[in-house]
Image (cartoon, rainbow, N blue to C red):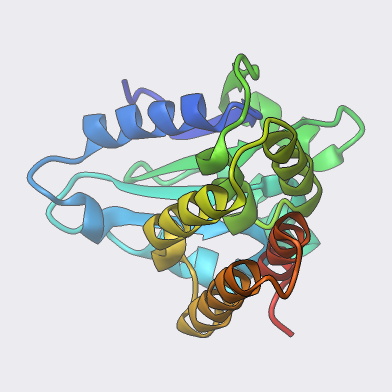
Length: 219
């Protein structure tokens, strides 16, 4: 599976992208070495210092390290410049997976890295579900998340069940967030649950506010 140093996964089919990432992980890591050699970053929270530290770190009990960077179109200009430079001469012990839901031919960053990576494209082939919505929220994709939530509510999905699914997905993904962000977002989930069950807010509005507030970067 792993014959390249860098992969670019493009598309909105989050499930298929996750399967590709899992396949790469399985080809790299044996005997529970993943936890020592995997770094996952979301563009809005990533800094140049953190990325450099992750790239320069040596593998532990493994021949390779894996770095995953989500939603790369929203990386800072400094990070984009650094990545373009790095990808021209990547370290042999580091595998990088870059992820984006879309691509723009006018984006000079994307056109610069395309010749330097192996590209996988994923088309949306099914209706997004509550777990897809949870991933969108964790990744701060507000517009896409609100659109998906509206679709789920139009399908007459029960708001309490949607909230439960979102909280389950958040618990699964929250280790990628800082402790302060986890605490802030947990309070938002608890407040939303109370707003729905007490009738303080209409369920649809409560869920929309949850999406907006969880996606909003901490001030």
